[in-house]
Image 1 (cartoon, rainbow, N blue to C red):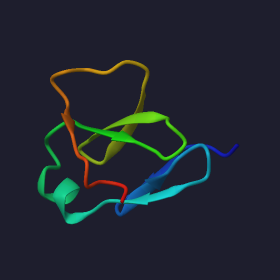
Image 2: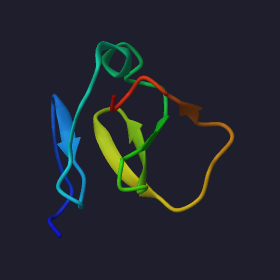
Image 3: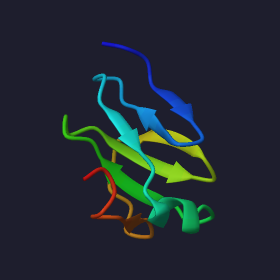
Amino acid sequence: MSELTVDDDGFTCVCGNRNEYPQYVKEHWGVRLSFSCTCSRKYILFHGSVYRSVVDAPEIVDSEAFGD
């Protein structure tokens, strides 16, 4: 497994999958967005930072389009 790496265009999950930010994420930079990688790890995206999530939080918006 690799480390979680983040840049201005997206992030690479610890499983190695690269996830590019779609325009939706860039337009909602100040909103906490939930993302599930294809490996089933969950992340929270906020202001260009990516945090590993261990629980679902109802106040976080789930972007179904992200990661497709």
